[in-house]
Length: 113
Image 1 (cartoon, one colour):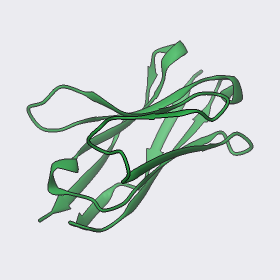
Image 2: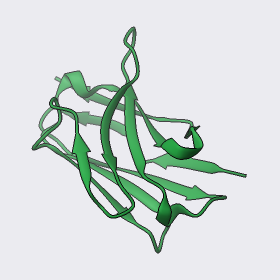
Image 3: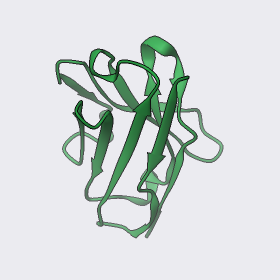
């Protein structure tokens, strides 16, 4: 059974940093592209960053230069390092395995201004 479990969310002041983790199980993690999405209150879920099995990355314009996605295939984990956080980054962040259409439960990030 596919499981994606996010962690690392919390409350942080604007300008601060957080690192989100998503631990995967139940599928061959190393061959799957992975992504991080977010959904702010009253808004649609949007792609934040994605990473291919080979490590190529893609970012939303709003987070380029501030966020970094990475993966550790030995730990079946994908990360999202978030720096220079802004109030508009406040959202629930979700891990996504695209080929499986599988989502994690989400982790809340709140950035206070």
